[in-house]
Length: 112
Length: 240
Image 1 (cartoon, rainbow over the protein chains, first blue to last red):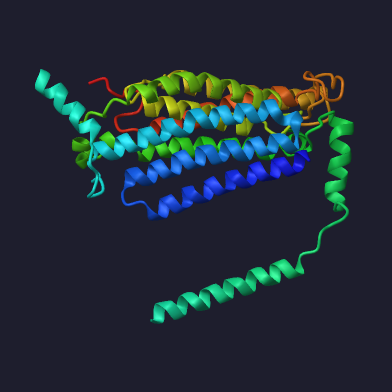
Image 2 (cartoon, each protein chain N blue to C red):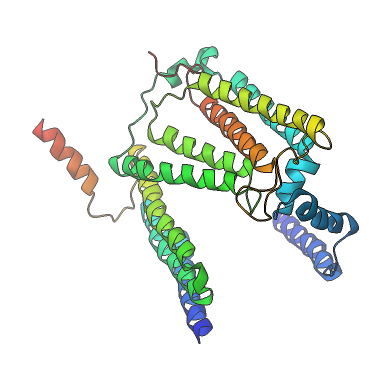
C-alpha cells in the first residue's frame, strides 16, 4: 500500500518535471522560462523525494534535509540568474504588461 | 539536405554501437580476483568499512599523493596564466565595478555557507566509514568558497594563509607516509595508529588522518585556483 502511494507521489513529481521541461521549450522569453524551470522543478523535486520517503520511511530525515536544501537554493539561484539577466537588459517578451522592477527604479530616481 | 543525411548516418552508427554494447553485456556474478582480494583485505587488514577509501589512502596512497601534486601544478598554472593584470588589453575589463549582489542572495549565502562547510567536514571525517573522503570533502569546501566569492565580489581570500596551510598539510601527509615506513609495513601504511573497533568513528588507523590532511590540501588548492579566475593581481584584489 505504502509503495503504491509512494509511486503515485513520484509520478506526480515527474509530471511537474515534465511541465518544467515543456515550459523551458515553449515559454516566450528568458524570465518566463526561468520561472517555469524553477517553480515546477522545485515542486517536482519535493514530490519525488516525498514519494521516496513513502518507500523508505527510515530515510525520512535525510530526505527532509535535501528537500529543505532544494527549497532554499532553487529560488535563490533563479532569482540571481533573473536579476543578472535583467541588468544586462535581456528583453522581456513583447506582450509583457507590468515591469515592477523598472517602476521601482523609476520611483527611486524621481524621489532623489 | 546532406547535413540531414549525415545526421541520420551518425545516429544509426551510434545506435549500432550502443546496441552491440547492450546486447553483449552480461552481468558479473562474482568479483574478479583483484577486486575480491581488495574486498577481503581492506576490512581485515586495514579495518576500514569503505573499501574505496582504504585502497585510495593505503594501497594506492602514493598515487593519491601524485594526484594532489598534479592539482597543485594546475593551481600554479591557473594563477600564472590567468593573472589578468599582466595583460595590457585587460585593464578596461578589470576596472569595471562588479555589481553588488542582491539582499536575497546575500542572506542565502550567509545561511548556506556554514551548512556547506559542516557538510564538507562530515564528508572528510567519515571518509573511512561511508562514501566520501578527502578529495570530495575538499571539493565541497571549495564550492563554499566559490559561493562566498560569487556573492561578495570584493571578498579577499587570504592567499598566503591558504598557501601555507596547503603546504603544511602536504608536508604532514608525506611525514605520515614516512612514519608508516618506520613504524609499520611501508610508505603510507595506515597501521601507524591502532586500528580500533571496526566501523567506529576513531578507527582504521591512519586513514582518517590522511583523509583530513588531504581534505585541507585539496580545499586550499581549489580555493586558490578559484581565486585565480577573478580579475586583478593575485592576492591583492581590489586594493585600488
